[in-house]
Length: 105
Image 1: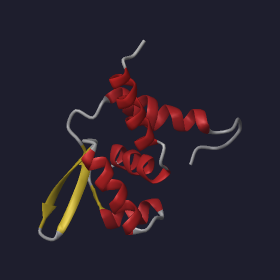
Image 2: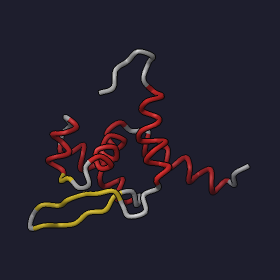
Image 3: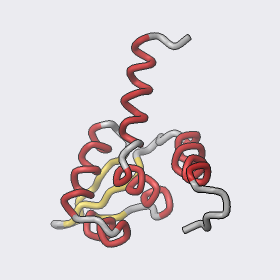
Image 4: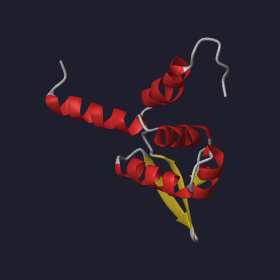
């Protein structure tokens, strides 16, 4: 049985992943090593504000890091981002969430 602290940590992590924009940002950064807010917004068909907010929360949680090149900030998955989280949550749960017969896309 997990401790209360473990359960709270798990709940916080899952709530971060439960948001569609944040989940898609993590997925995009898993596929492409590094992207800026504008490129993520175009790829996700989202506003830069929505992507920026998602990145701020993910960075605070330690899931992504950033580097600045001139005026552009690039984001990537944090070093040590858990491989099981990549495989099971970013890829596996997307596949499980699809209805039978629904195409990849």
